[in-house]
Length: 152
Image 1 (cartoon, rainbow, N blue to C red):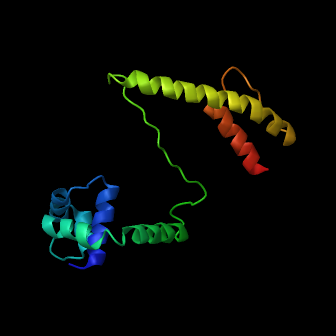
Image 2: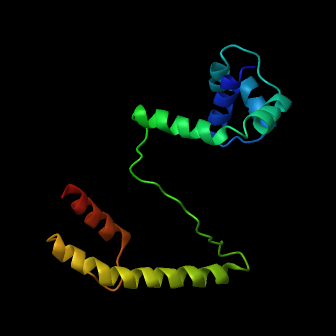
């Protein structure tokens, strides 16, 4: 099995939430989309997929994914104008430790709100925009402001 085909199978599997080598093997045998990616070749067994991932892919995975992202961007399939990194640690309400994270997120939200109340009015004046600062600045108001700034 060629490394190119195995990489296609892995990427498509990851895009569909399939990470287990056994489930990838099963998908290659049953799913028409995976069969198309294999190009009428026999489905790889789970050991081949696992070996490829652990032995051959670890050293080149960062380069391959950055090339894939550039290729998709060049094809117009995605935009590189924004990057989102989320390191938030939020717990479910049912969890017995939720009060720890809840207090922390509430404190951070309060700090962010206070900072926005100070910094947004001068920006609105500078760009001659109408922007009302109430008790709480809502995401929809920020989106409207961003849209107006983008048009300027």
